[in-house]
Amino acid sequence: METVTLAVCTLNQWALDFQGNYSRIVESITRAKAAGAAYRLGPELEISGYGCNDHFYESESLLS
Image 1 (spheres, rainbow, N blue to C red):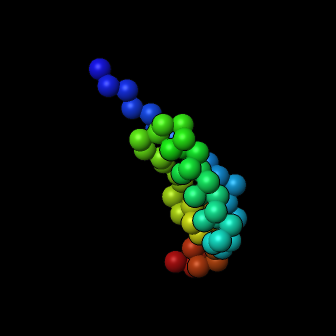
Image 2: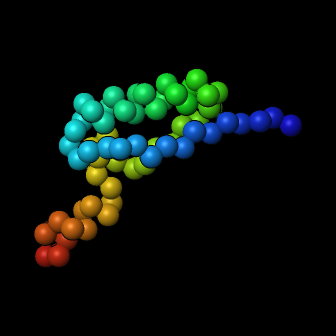
């Protein structure tokens, strides 16, 4: 039987802080590799810092 190590992360990302978000993503990848993870999963839109729920608060969502 083979063991697979997964790394799942939720980062403290900020909307439109591309450089800061990028740095935190790279750090999480480095930590995942150091822990022996074969796969690292992060949240959707982690580079831009937005999640799907954030978009629902935009005014054009109400106007559609």
